Length: 463
Ligand SMILES: Cc1cc2nc3c(=O)[nH]c(=O)nc-3n(C[C@H](O)[C@H](O)[C@H](O)COP(=O)(O)OP(=O)(O)OC[C@H]3O[C@@H](n4cnc5c(N)ncnc54)[C@H](O)[C@@H]3O)c2cc1C
Image 1 (cartoon, rainbow, N blue to C red):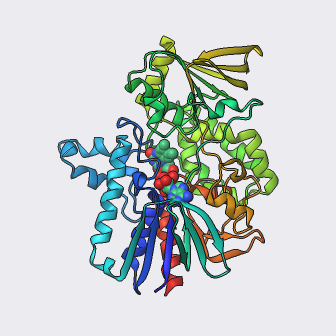
Image 2 (image 1 turned 120 degrees about the vertical axis):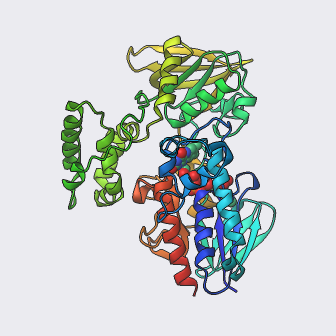
Image 3 (image 1 turned 180 degrees about the vertical axis):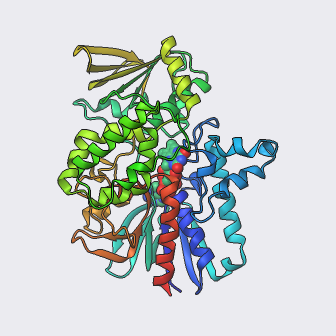
């Protein structure tokens, strides 16, 4: 019997497995490998606080591309939401733990469905620590000591924890006052509630961490520092379709044309009292195609000059969360800084953070009790701790894209490329590791399509 192993069981691994089970024709063994705590839910939907919310409204969070109302309908059946107006619910940002429950429910239904008897489902509550490839079979070494040999492999292990910041003295990275992984509960339970903290980064994870700290009784001042200094923007014009921009972006526009066209449309939107939001959202269905059409030099230019601007316009937060952050800033409980980090040094019970302020050019030193790294997932595998993908890279089984945003793969088949740039026909990937290839590949909207497409590829090949 052929064996398919899926490494990582967050949204991507779970939904690929669900489509595989639902579409199985011939028998095969499906082996799911991942840590028990985040099984089905992944990092995003195993939040370290119950109040952390989705950054996309309920009506857009279906796990199925061909059933857009699936999540909303599921939520409506829950007792706690049964009396809530459905229109309101559709436009609500619901708790992330609830989405984790939704994925667990999808999984339980899939394994209990009649078609599931055609598939031998094996679950390994462990992590893959190493991978080898014979040209035919894929060999996976697990942390629990087991070794598996499979004919098909899916790399669905999602995001890595953030990279450590580039500072000269790296001693602090071994300290229990430095949290490299912002997505664990330790961040809240091991932080001194009554002394200041420093958050590195100024994005969605920063917002989650600030609110999580406060929810857990934190009473002192929270500082943040980011190199770009852009402030988070709220979702203001939800659901407004701006179609004019897409019509002008046919063909292969160069980066300079893209910027020119977008700037003009943003000006038009602003004249009518809107922000850039509808224009940026209007681009979403085209983003992957536009990215793929850019030359290597244009992608490089985008990364060095426009990336942070794009990320700020694209990754917005719900209005009420934005208002809360503004309020915290106004009362002085939250201080956002833009600057270049120089050093983070542990001294006795405290940590001193030094940076050059972008505005004034002055060097500032802030003393805090801990530092939380919210700079976003590391994408350069060589900067991550020892893991199976870093080893696979060193062995030439996989190769990174030129911008080191992920790994190279054929976006049509999801087949991962080796260091000779040839796609393997039995090793696949999905999700954020495709960022260098597709750019827009982290949210449910893209991943649900990918999971269905990848499962179809596998079903075709296995039979
Ligand atoms: C905090 C946060 C909030 C988000 N909120 C939203 C949102 O509201 N809406 C939205 O559309 N998107 C959101 N996203 C985007 C999110 O990335 C996707 O929605 C989706 O959850 C990604 O799933 P994934 O399975 O690809 O990766 P992950 O969720 O990272 O899952 C990967 C899994 O692989 C496991 N794994 C890692 N290494 C190994 C290994 N060596 N061996 C075995 N298993 C391994 C991990 O433990 C994890 O369980 C959010 C992301 C984050 C980080």
